[in-house]
Structures are given as C-alpha cells and as structure tokens.
Length: 401
Image 1: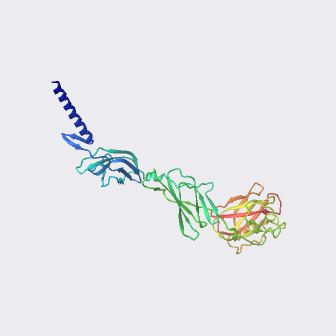
Image 2: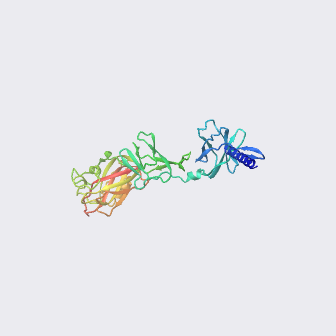
Image 3: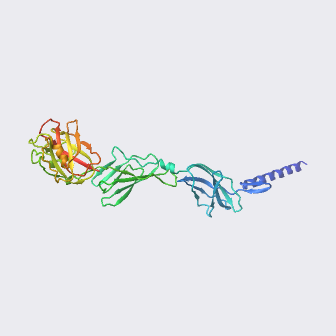
C-alpha cells in the first residue's frame, strides 16, 4: 500500500512539473474560455525623437518570426498607425507620426501575428512635441554689444556671445566686394567669424538654428534674419587731399600742413608731425580738406591732439558735397561767417566741446540724416592752452555707415 501511495504521489508531482515547464515555454500564452491565447513577441528598446509637430518612434524588432506588423496607439487609443514588421530582425524599425499638436504624448506599441493575436502593450510616456510656441521663444545669437565687429582692411570680424540653448549654427549673409552675396556659418562653439572682402556700407544678415533636444529630428529656425546695420567703416585716408580756400588759416611751416592730419597717428604726437596753424589768423579760424569722394552716411569722427599744447577743445565740423559757389568771403572770426556759410550750402555737422586738455583720442557721433558730404571744414573756436591764434592737431578720422 505504501508503495502505491508513493507511486501515485510521484506521478502527481511529475504531471505538475510537466505543466510548469509547458507554461515557461509559452511565456506569452494564456487561456480564455478554455482556448489558448497567443501573445506575439515584444518590440525592444523603444525610443522617441521629437520634432516639429511630429515624432519619430524607433525600436528593435521582436525576434519572434510570427510577428508580421506593429501598431502604435495614442490619444487614449483614438488614433493609431500600422507599421510592417519587415523580414530582417536585425534592422531597426522606425516610423514618423505627423500632424500632432504641441503637447506631451504617450504612445503604446503592440506586435501582431498573421492571425491577429496581439502582444502585451509596450508604453513610452511623456514625449514632448514642439511647434510654433517653442519656435517663438528662439532668438538669433546676440552680438557682443561692447565690440560687435572689428574691421581689418577689406575684412570684417563679427563677435558673438555664446549661445544659451542648443544652437546648431548661425547662417551669416553678406555682400562681397564683387557685389555677390556670400553665406558662411558660425558654429555653436565659435564666438567670432570673419567675412572676407566685405563690401563697405552694406548690411550683414544672420539667422540662428536650434534643436529643442539633442535627439530631435527637426531643426528650428528663428522668426527671420536680423541685420547688423550702422556698420561704421573708416574712410580711406589715401583719398584725402589738402585744399586751400579763401580765409582758411595758414600753417606754421611747410611741414606742418593739413595733410599731416591723416598720417595714421593713433596717439598724440609732437612737432612737426602735426597740423600747426600760423599766428596770422586769430581764433576762431578754419581749414578745409577733401575726403576724396562723396559720403552719404557720415557716422563718427575722432580727433587726436598734440602731445603738449594748443589742442582744440571747442570746435565745429562743417561739410558740403560740392564746392561750386561754396567759398565764403567772410573771415572765420567774423560775426556773419555762420550765416554766410549756411547760405552757401555748408552744413554744420557737429559742435564739439571737450573738458580735458584736448590731447587724447576723442570720438563724437554724427546725427542721422546728414546730407552727403565730400569737403570738410573744421572751425576751431578755443584751444586748451588759451592761446588766441595757434591750434595743433595730430590726427583726424571719419567713419561712414
């Protein structure tokens, strides 16, 4: 009897073990109303790459050979998309879902076999989709306002601040000296870019591009190009020429003429590398010179005084485009000189007053809307030394924009 009991117990244990092994071998099988339910193999490693009102889902195919397709559901199952499984289980599957809204989405992916059996669900949640709202937050990279550009001959170097988001590049367009439009790209890790053979006086345009996240499938651009305007370009002093009009002040010597004003000095210099007036014309007195061609957008002026004395601290800058009928008959210190100059077409470009000794480089900006100018007249009213006749200057520089 005992042997039979042991035998019956052993058989029961064997049946239980066989049933357990069968369950493990069919991991995704179940029973419903006595019928076997099949669960096809699962896709693995699902990833999402967001874009512009769309998303790309990718995964590793299931090795289950019965899998024939996948189906993706979103919007609580209201929307779905079907993807063929393919024949190579080593080739990743990917699909782009378009026409989404700017929102956070959750997606559910199922595998299907040819009989319509469906796998258990695989979810990927909280995928942010981007669109116009994100795009409206983007700005073009900022120029360094303290030093936005530097000129070097015919080249111009732009200085940018580092980007504060995921910038992928900034497209810069400019007009080449030959009149063609050139395009160059500023990389995200660059803060400066040089535009070769830039055509003086033309605008420079730039537009930045971004991605919202590193894995994004779309690049977003800002609303449009910004422009670098009012680029001040120094006038070419090689074109400058000394002229002598009626009532212009004379010079102290033949080697201290007006032409010394464009020697290229960058700091106060001494005699004789200066303009030095004679003592025959009391202040106020003036001198005139030719810029070499007409400039329509005069922007800035700089004066550098002598290294010691008689530097202008109060003076006027006048300009005119054509000398026809422009010669004044009144001396500069005559009460009627200003009225006559205006009547003959001269324009007062700037009144300058400085409180130092007049030696250091000193810049002043011209107002917008000045008329075209080719000829310059500087009328010295006062000098730092208080002298009533002499005036000394090392260098003058003009910029156009």
